[in-house]
Image (cartoon, rainbow, N blue to C red; front, side):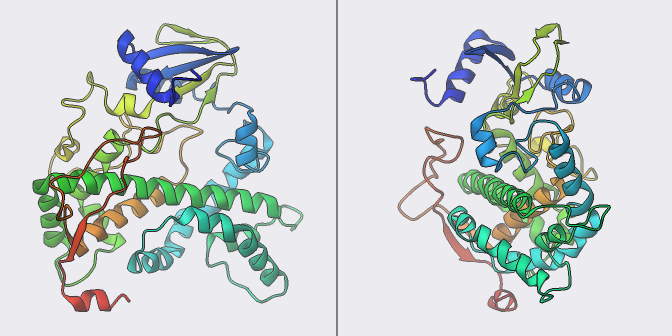
Length: 383
C-alpha cells in the first residue's frame, strides 16, 4: 500500500473489483475491516456498539489529541468518559445552544470564508490563557461562550474540573471540526447547484416563498427549508468530508452478518461506499436532492438513521454536536443562496467537479460569480 496512495482509493477499488461490501485488509498484524453496507453498519454501530466503542492507541492520534485529552480520538477509559460527559452534559446542551444563538447570528451576519485553520493554530493557546487569567483576576464574571463554560466547570470538591491542557485540547478539536465539515459540505453543494441551475432555482424559490426578500434567513426558519436541507444532505451523500469513519477497535471476537471479526480488529465504515452504493441508491453519482424528500410534510434531517449516509455517525462514538453542526451548515448554505445569484465564472461553462488526488475535496477550489439578489438595505442592516 505504500506506493498505492492515497490508500483509501486503493481500498475502495479493491472492494469494487471484488464486488463486496465488507473486506478485511491486513496491515502488519492489524486486521482493518472496511464496510460499505448500511445493514452491516447498523450491526456494528447499534447492535454491537459497546464492543467496538474504543479507538486504537496510535502515536498520531495521541499527538493530535494532546495526549488523548480530547474525546474523539481517545481510547475508551476514564478520560474519554469524563470529556464525553463534559461535552454532552455541559457544552452541547439545549440551554447552551440557545445561549449562543446571538453569537452564531453575529457570525452569520458577518460571513467571511477564509482558511481559518492557520489562525486557529496561531492564536488558540494564547487566547485561552488570556481568558483564564481574566477569570482568575475577576475581570470576567459571566459564562457567555463555550470557553467560559469549560473554564468554570467544577468537580465535587469545587475545584476546576478541567486542566488548561484539557480545555485547549477540546476547544481545538471542536473548532477544527466546526471549520472543516461545514465549509467542505457547502463548497461541494454550491458547486453541484451552480452546474444545475434548475436545482439552484428551486432552492431560491423555496427561500423566497418561506422567508421573502425583505429579511435574511434566521435559524428559526431552517426547519421549513426542506429543499435547501435536501441539497445539503445530497452533498453529504456524494461528497463526504472524509473517506472513512474514525476506526473502532473490537474488544473481543464477534460475528457480524455471518462474518467473524477477530478481537483487536479496526473497523471503519466507508462514507463514499455507503453514500454511493448502487444497491441502495438509484443513479448514485447523480446530484438529485429530491431523493431525500418523502412528502411535503415530513421534515428533512441531515442524519440518516438507516446509515445509508454517514453525515454525523451514531452510537457511543457518534458526533455529540449534531444539532449545532446541522444548524451551522444549513445556515451557511441558506445565507449564500438567499443573498446572491450564483453562476460559473465568465470564462468557464461548468464547474469542474473532479476530486482531489489526495482526499475527497474539490481538486480546484470553487470560484463562482456572485451578484447580490436582495435590496442593498438588507445587507447594510447587518454590517
